[in-house]
Each structure stands twice: as C-alpha cells, then as structure tokens.
Image (cartoon, rainbow, N blue to C red; front, side):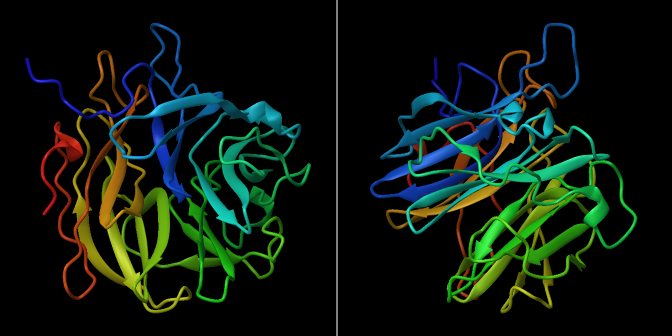
Amino acid sequence: MTAFFNPIIKHKYTADPTVISYGDRVYLYTGHDDPPPGVDDYVMNDWCSFSSNDLMNWEEHPTPLKATDFSWASGDAFASNVVCRDHIFHWYVAVSHRSTFGKAIGVAVSDRPTGPFTDAKGSALITGDMLPCPTTEKANLDPSVVMDDIGQAYLFWGNTTCFYAKLKANMMDLDSDIKVVEVPAFSEGAHVFKRNGWYYLMYGYGFPEAVAYAMSRSVHGPWKFKGIVNKVPYNCETNRPAVLDFKGESYFFYHNGAMKNGGSHRRSVCLDFLYYNGDGTIAPIVMTDEGITGNAG
C-alpha cells in the first residue's frame, strides 16, 4: 500500500500555512481546525508550530500561541503570517476582537522561532473602524508581510477587498494610510513575497477558492494579473498558500480536506514543488498525493 506524503501533518488538522527558513531549518506555522464531533464550522483556538531540515520529516513544537494570548481578543485563531527581522520573530494574526466589531489583526513577538510568543502591543494593530471603505465583519483576515530591498515592511490582508499599508520600523504600527489593491475576484488568503525583482501577490480567487496571482515591479503596484496558479483544493472550499525557497528548490504550501473525516472545516497542510518560468511567471502548480517525495525538475 502506497504511503502518501500529503498531507504532511497527519495526526491533527492543520490549515493556513505560513513558513520561514532560519538557519538550516524550515519553520512551519499553521492554524488548527478543532471542531467537536458533529460540528461543521470553523473552530480554531490556537496555532501550531513544526520544523524540519529536509521538508520530509517534521518535528512538532509546543503550542506557541493562542488567540486568547491577546487580552483584547475574544478568540478565533484565523490565518496568520510569521516574518523574521533582526532575529526577532513577528507573528501577524487575525482574531475576533473583544469590544470592536469584527475581526482584527494583532502581532506577537518572540526571540525564538518556536516561541513562546507574546502580544507585542497589548492592543490590535488593525480594527474594522480603521478601514477606508465599507466592509464586512471578516474584512481583517489573513495578514501577510513583505519587505522591500531596503527593509521597509508592508502588510497586506483582507476579505473580499485586499488592503495594504506600510509598517513602521518597529513592525507593530502602521506608517501610512490603508490603501486598496485592485485585483480580480479577490476573496481572501493574501500571500505576498518578493523574488528576483518581482513582487508576487497570491490570493484566494472566487469561491470555492482557487489561487490566483499578480505580479508587480513595485510593492505599490500596478499589479498585473497573471491568472490561476492552483486549482480549488480537494474537498475544501478555501485555499491560503505560502511559498518558500529552500536549498535550491521552490515550494508551495497549501491546505486541503484530504485527511479522514476532513473537509472545509477540518483541513490539512500539504506541500508540492513550485516552478518559475524564465520571465518570472509561475507554472501551474500540480497538487499531488506524493508531494515532494518524487524527483524535482
């Protein structure tokens, strides 16, 4: 019987991957779907942490962060993004605010990639009343941070509308007005990164969510839409990607509903190769059961 590689975490439900390399290891942070039996809804109370030096064998670390570690949050550990700056790890999360309508974005910090992480501000970085246009209560979902060549950081996020803003050097406060990014059929799940002079904006496209992407030479745009790069995942309506270059290869992290009793509210993180064309565009990503156990190239 074939032992499939995907999903890469098989003992619990994981979703919404964010991933970094630090030293000679890769650190994977995920959401944690944990609905009780008979409940078919999003129940997410904490985030998970794993690491690997080969992307094949993953070590789990103690739970590094919970939604209620933010005293101003009422719960709900939605999609997140971890970035490292000056050997400090900044974890941007979406949670439900205790006293302000809707979801909010917070940031936690640690001097170790495995945590523990603590609330950096004692208050939300972004709340619904800060947004420049009418929104839904889920507007502040799925933060993603990218840094330009001089180390200036920018935060992207959103649900139905994609927003972005400049961050101060402390990585904990905004340093600009919040602006709207215009890309087709934006649903949620923004993931922004820079590679070889290009900025890439991946995001959930339509619903159920495929992953589309746009490219720009500037973090401020204009963004040129490049199309669908990843189809709707198996047995799952959502799709939040993460991209990593590690030891000469490029990788695409995502989630699906392939584990036993899985689905849109019991998701599992998967990993496949990602390939770039000569002009910097991305070849269509093939989601496989075998994952990276096959040969690259």
